[in-house]
Length: 469
Ligand code: ZN
Ligand code: ZN
Image 1 (cartoon, helix red, strand yellow):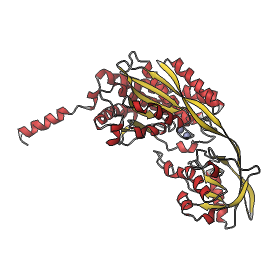
Image 2 (cartoon, protein in one colour):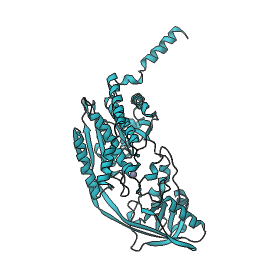
Image 3 (cartoon, helix red, strand yellow):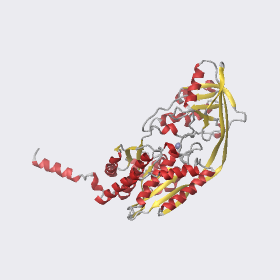
Image 4 (cartoon, protein in one colour):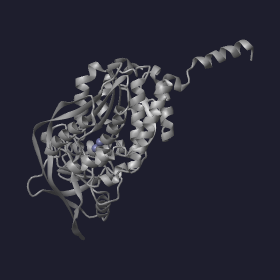
C-alpha cells in the first residue's frame, strides 16, 4: 500500500468517532453510575408490589381503573417529578360476569372445561347455547371451510402457541383469537371456543381481546385452557359427534373516561425535546397484572427516579407515560398519538416496557441513519448488562404502535419472554412471578437509555421523514 493510500485510510479511520465520542466522559460516567445504582436497587419491585397488592386487577373502565390512576398520580408526585398530569382517554367498556363450557359426547361423561370469555364477547342467551362442535386446526383451516360445515355449530380452533424467547410465535397464534370469532360468525357459527393463546400446560385459560366488524353479528367467544383443549381434541378424535354447551354472562357499559398518566423530568437545555418511556397501567380482570404490565410500570418509574436523583437534570426532558386501556385495543396509545403526533419532531424517542420481567438481551431501534451511531454508543453502555446490538426494525412496544405511522423514532429493549406466555392474561399473572434481580437489570437498561438519549448530541429523526427512509 502506498503511503498516500495509507494516509487516506488513516484519515478515514480517524474521521469516524469512536462510539464513546458521542458523549462526554462525564455523561458516560453518569450512565455507568445509573447502571450500577439500578443493579444495586430492587428495580422498582416495591412499586409493582404496591400496585398489585393495593389495586390488584385493574381492567380498563372499572372502579379499579380509577383507583389505579389516583395511585399513579400520587406515586409520581411523591417521587418528585417536575410535573405530573392526566390526559383523558374515553372508550366503551365491557366486563365479564361468568362463563361456563360443558362438553358432552356419546360414551363420554359430561365434563366442564376450564374457560375464560374473550374480551368484548357478547353474552349467550340465559341458559346458554348448545351445538355440535366443528374443529379446525387453525384459523386458516376455518377460513378455508365451507359455510355449511360451520353454520349452526360451535367452532373449535385447536392451534397451539409455541414457546419463543422473543415472543415472535405470539403474532401468528393470536390471530385465532383476534380474527377467529369474526370468521366463525360470518360463516354462521353459534359460538366459538379457542385453545388459549398461551404456552402454559396449567389448567387455567388465557383471555384477551377479540373483535367483530359488526356488533350485531357478534357471537360468544371463549378460550379454554391448554389441557382442556387437549381433552376436547381427544373427544373429537373418538369419532362421534361432540356437543358443547357454552354459557357467558358479560355486560357492555356506557363510555368511560380514564387517563394516561404522564410525569416529566424537565430538561435543562432543551426541555421541549422529549424522551418518552411507556408502560400500561390497565390489566385484564384476572390475575393482578404483575407481569402485564405492573412490571413495566415499575421498570420505567425506577429508571426515571434514578435520573431524578442525579445532581443535574438531563439536557432534554424525559416523560414517563402510564398508558390507559392498552388491553382493550391500545386506546391510551391511540389517544396519545392523536394528541401529540403533530409535535413528533420534539418527541425524540419512544420506548415501552410491556413484556413482563425477563432480562433484556438486545436493543433494536428505528431511528434516522444519522442517529444510528448514537444507538450503537448507547448499546456499548448496555453491553455489561448482557444486552447486544440488534437491528434497525423496532416497534417501541404496543402503545407506540399507533405513533409509528406518524414517524415516531422508537427503541425496543427486548426481554427474554420464554416464560411470559405461561402467565399472560391469566389468573396466574401475580407478583411472585417477578424476579427482582431481572427487574433491576431492566431498570438499569432503561435508566442508561433514557439518560444517554436525553444527552444525545443528535436528534433521533422523529417525524414524517423517518417514514421515507
Ligand atoms: Zn401488556
Ligand atoms: Zn396484555
